[in-house]
Amino acid sequence: MADSGGPNGRTPGARRVRAFVALPLPEPQRALLAAHLVVCRSAAPEFRWVPPGSLHLTLRFLGHLEPSKLERLRRGLRELRGHPFDLALEGLGSFGGRRAARVVWLALREGAAEAAALAQRVEAASQAAGLEAEPRPFRGHVTLARARAARGSPLPELPPPPHLARWTATEFVLFESRLGRPAPTYLPLERFPLRG
Image (cartoon, rainbow, N blue to C red; front, side, top):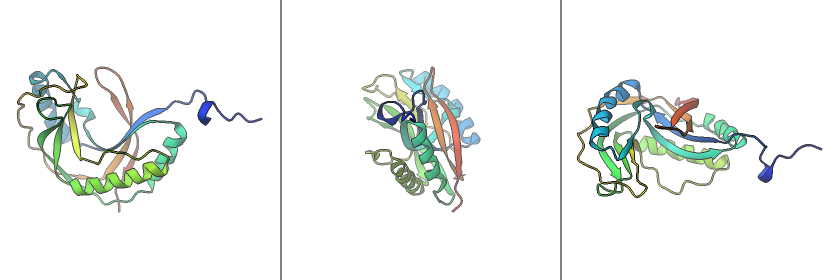
């Protein structure tokens, strides 16, 4: 008799993967932000500042996925179509307000509508793979820091971010997120070109 797996049909020992889908930042933009983040880290140590190599624009956080669901999602993402589009970042913002900021981010100056449309297609692929619908509306941004306190922290005045040149998004990426200290590690699992 074949083994049907563990409880809930899971295969014993199968490793669940914490994952998300995102648009990566090019190296020139990361390099310019690196010095800015050093200054911000000194000005606001009550926040965990994202390492420059981990900066990205999240299209969909997926949570912990079992291998079978992850494979269904990968197949769905390979079917997505979309043209390359331009992106530009400008201006700091925060979720939670300055008195109790939970997340500090860079806003999209260009490409917000195109990023939202791509996020909508990623959402449809996620649901087709068996994930529950994302209840929060998509808000395109690049996270720079998260408050160490769950309730948020006062956000001091920070220097304006450097001018970042516009770039063209030519792919989106499925990342694995491995939690650890001082920060999570993001590993690209598969890249999906935008080619119409």
